[in-house]
Image (cartoon, rainbow, N blue to C red):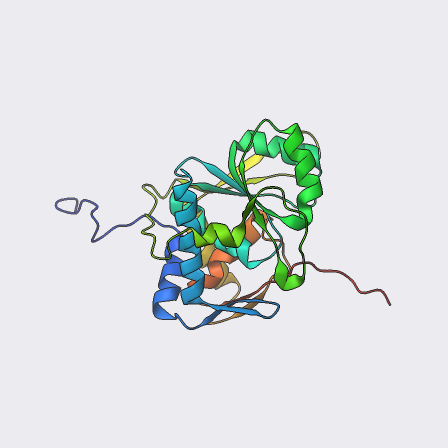
Length: 259
């Protein structure tokens, strides 16, 4: 049973959730993928923007083993980061937006952050964190104008301008090994310094299938983002929803309305 049955491109490929978006864009290109305020994007657009992000990062020298940190709310940019960053072979580090400057600074240094994609709402805390950190990442500013968040920029590069420098047809590569890291997450550090936890491409892909089975998701579900995507990568739902070509309804924050 082992003769002439070695792995090859015809019978084996590494498990990765990145192929889920590629498939959704190929099979359901016009299906609504993202809703954010008045913004609407289909899977064709979602996939093209993720590839543009990957291309722009690659032009800046980002590749396997590099860390791209994201301090973002539940926005389309955060969804794009979950695909565009690992498409370069790099590792996505989503940071809890509720943490203080010292804890974030520790994460920047421990993760050896090369690029920081940051929502301008969180600039005051991030500015303080960067003064404490040894890491000096390239900063890309994300302004959530759909929700009226202009904020204050940390650097000169705007997220949309950064994407504009990328190629929507970027030929991203599959991970060389499904055991490669896809994301890095940290604990909050309540009893000491934060502890880093790594997801592999294989683990994330298997979790996507498990999510679909456990929640009885059928084709084209609608998923409202109340869970922060920085929390365990949103339990892998940024990728799971693509497996069934569903719709992400982004929700920047959840607040109880005073009576």
